Length: 522
Image (cartoon, rainbow, N blue to C red):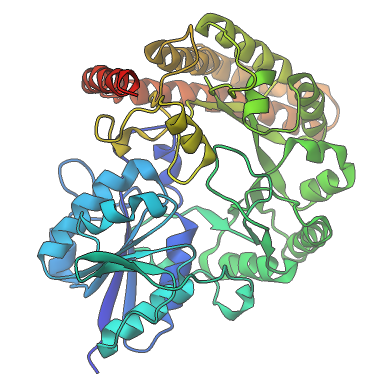
């Protein structure tokens, strides 16, 4: 039987954003997991094209995205899958799906964007099959059916057009036995230069935040599997930096502790320090045993979703914490020496039962004061994104506040643009400008001079403490912070210049007009 090629495409971001630089060092884990599962099938070759990480040799078109004409001519694919995990990349996804569809190639799409409400949209934009949920098993079954020309009706967890109507097969249960699958094979990602490796132990999240698409009871692999995955990457790819993509590190405390102890022992065994980043809840500050184990394991960076310093907004998000408590908790992370990356959402819409009015300048003042008191190392401040399938989107639609995607396309769903009518007295444009003001206040040009000052004070600080290790640690932390904040200023400058302001403002005016008409007509 002739071998066939299955290609997975991770579409390019619509414009430069705060994730663009890090995207050139890593890739999405989901497509690699699916590609690895398919690569174990007889008769199939697999490759993954990450348009945000094409390395040095990836063929490009003028926009910087991948040249699929050249790729397809060099290595023809019979089936192409598209990763729809980021809603802002969906217009590019549809553009590519239509191009491949015109070539007579079977197209498949999956990811968080494709909630029930977007199935019709996908099937009318060049997609032959939509996959729901995790796709490791689904893609294997679908490709088996396509290869043998059998009916796809028995493939669980897909939707497609049948006799002109959308047909959805039986649902597939979420995966629980992860040991059945091989470790993600990053060599499948063509062209990419990967230095930050995503790994996982837990899928799902029980926190039920209104704005988030990740739901359900956490499903956990063993601590041994995560450690073995890291060992595999160290030994086969010389990896040293890892991002643990679990939504909340430490959800299964005993296993998380055991993993940390095993990872610390492994680093002692090989005589090498590995550096990891984890996403974690702020209330884990109440567990000093876990925090100490994380530090011993080399988990140096923690990404924490503070979301907002405004209590009314925290209540609307279903966050079970208040701003004053957050300040006391973040200090614990700093005392343990963690590098804290704070993630914020500016202008979150208040719940109907607790309405409040706060002008944009006062919100900005609250954010700045909190960030300054918390002494956070790096921050990201984005606008609320009413993603498909979230309760936030449902609430805003019921309140007739959300701008229609026909007016403000999916490409604007990256956290840079206002996508709904905000709480009065703040306007949509004020909300967008205020978020940029906070980021511009935090990442400043002056840090270039402070980086130079750190270099000049290196001997004084390091040797004056009579403890070279402690002196180096303190100096390096200060120097690194200043360097990253200056780099953030450079990134923010390019990011702001790429916001397509004139196009967005014209579309925003049109969207608000249509929204007012809908409100007036009931």
